[in-house]
Length: 315
Image (tube, rainbow, N blue to C red; front, top):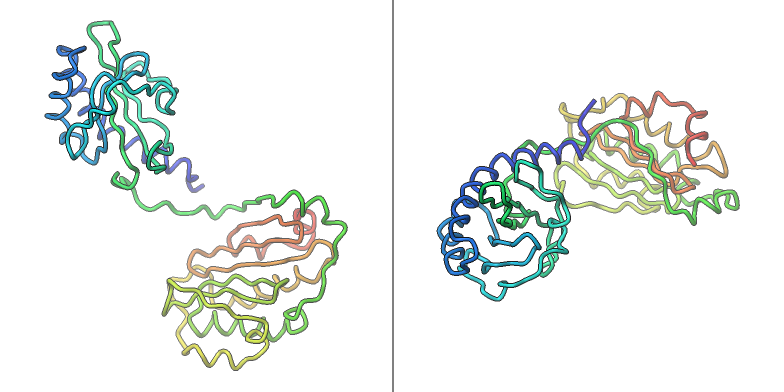
């Protein structure tokens, strides 16, 4: 089983904590002898700031969350933060572990409204807790300590708009222009995927359009409307291209996938497919039904499921 995005975040947090805990502990030790002296605390923080890479602000708080130093930043001292009450900030509402170091959950910064994170280190004198050393980070500045997260291929269902769900039995499928030309549209989509470099498409059956991406220009999508999806000449716009070897969906299964989508569109007049997507590189299929419920799964799992599953799970 692949890790979830939360597992990946936790792995990243552990790696960051390992990088930060020792430098902060050393700075906290330097703060203890000059505790209560604003100027000397500022001096310790100024001398130590560069030892914590990527830090945005560094400061010292008492046990009530009141700031007893200036902010230290890349530009030097910011005295206007002295005396600031940080007790209600998200990182101050988390319990610092017994070993004295906390890497907070991510939160939005108060002034810039940016995703941020704060590291807290307890400052002790013997067994007495004097306060905390705090270091703020902008998430943009922190290095990624692990490989890019890979989306799970496990089937996921996400419920849609409650207003649509509550009225689903009052609606029936209305034939769209694409429905009338569904065989032609299906053949065009198959041609573009199998032989002309299209690697991802979102097919909007109800609104008769497809949003498509091509290998030759992957960062920009193109829109095929009902007229384009009913005219095979549209294929002439895109040069013939060999099917990519690295695609996870085999070329000879594309037709089966499109046929299965078409069947889900027409089998039931109340619960029917509104839109679907396919990406040949990650091998994923998505489906959104008339009840606004969405499903995400691998192409293999999609082809394994029969109609009884879908019309039991659609809502």
